[in-house]
Length: 270
Image 1 (tube, rainbow, N blue to C red):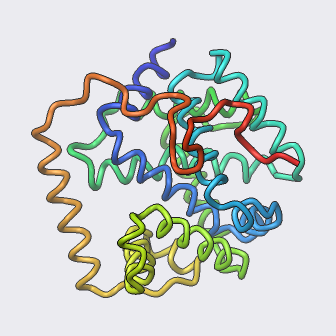
Image 2: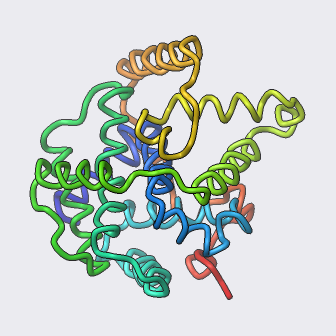
Image 3: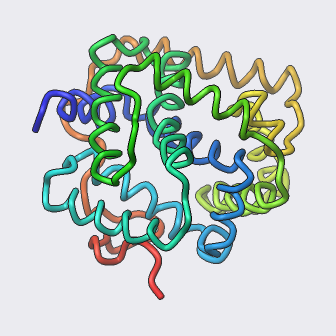
């Protein structure tokens, strides 16, 4: 295990586990903001036909890679499946780099804003180093070598590519339903839960993402409530010790796989 992978693994699976988990979810939503990516995702039928499995499969793929790295047998198996899934579609190198960039910058920005402390320079370098390894293993060319270069490319892409498309609204509606499905059944009975879940997600998205997704500006009261709550939580987390054990383990049970999963179950099956 090289230094970049070791450091990134530690910050994701232990020190910043809850923040990175939210950040990775927001990174996935951000891909809906690009019409050609949204249309591709909708066209697969996975997010609308099997949203629960698709959401958990995405998480499994990410955490398997983070836990094991690109050179571990489990990492290689996940990458093989990932490359096979993507080869079925005509995806530009520019789009590949953007999606990779969402995994670098969106969780990091969330940690910097709502984590117990910002990432260090070393942790940022490890984050970039790890995803450059993933990108190289996927055959993505011309990944910028420095944080500043990659972030500049990432932001320029968003300015040029973000726009509303009906596909994004369909995807968002499907995954918002999924967020409600993850709540306890007793809570799901109440009709206001669905609308509050949607409104809370609007708060977590920034203005460019909300515009591209066709979402309204959240109320100031809700925005302030969520922000204060997250900042308070960050302050409390600052005084808690870093977990000594990983907060995620391979193969464990979840909502989509109540008995646990094996790697050959992950991904679409025709």
